Image (cartoon, rainbow, N blue to C red):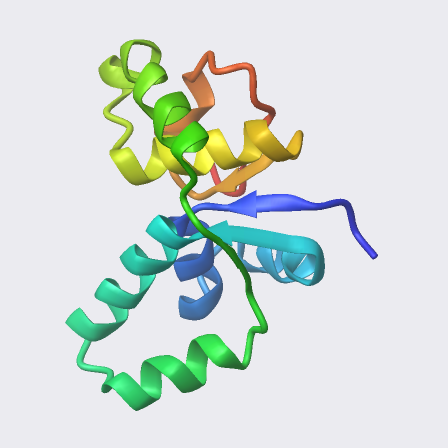
Length: 129
């Protein structure tokens, strides 16, 4: 089993869309976790593309994702990351992913190139540059 990683929404969407970097996400998937906020972002994007509720459930259910709730401690941590990440344009979902990764002591896997410059104390792996 590969080492655990925390997926952000763009990383999971990269896998679902078969984009560059999808291989790395597929490799990490058996040991990966994703936060509920990032899952919500993925669900929203799939719905925007016209998938039905059932299709979204089928696609995401087949991945057997380990989905973690956003805890109060992660909420505080994500909020405290705002000053360090504001200039990079990281969203609340991005910071929630980083807070989960910090809590688990796991690297964050992202397709968001802006994360490469983030000084957050979390190991960040950008799957495409």
